[in-house]
Length: 183
Image (cartoon, rainbow, N blue to C red; front, side, top):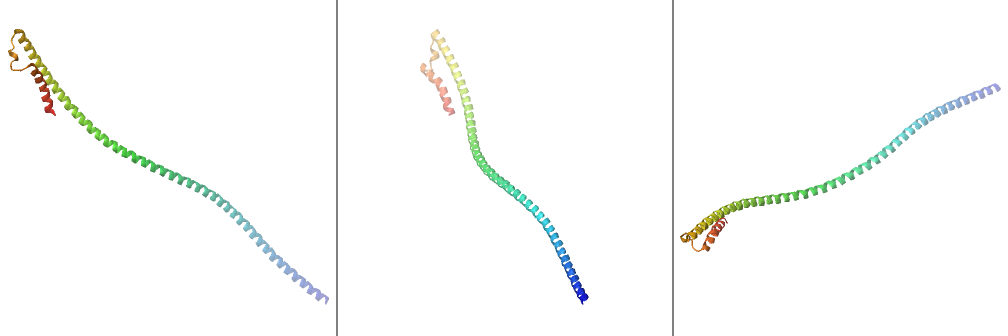
């Protein structure tokens, strides 16, 4: 019985060894799976850390871009306000220019009228000078004839002319008539 017993113990021992070996193999498989999973998780963790780093960099870039966009938007608003002010200035200048153009046209019309009047006055002046020169020539002729008549004692030339003061009226009457006619 001892050998049977020993054989049963041996068999039991062998089964126990096989079971422990299987459990160990199973545990080794689990351990390898766990190590592989751990390795995979480490890689995944590294990838995620890289992505987090990239996301942080992107977030910083986004912040910088947002700041630039805000600065650009503020500059755009400032330039639009400046443009509006310049448009208002331009409109004021255009209105002033329009008024100046109208004033210039009025002044041009006035100048043209004045030039026309100046030509008319020059013509009238020329005509008056001519009349004056004629009157002076006539007066000189009459005076010389009167002086000649006085020297030879005849006064017949003065007959019909009236008083000596009528001669001045006669001379001034020509100029006065001319001026009255032009008005």
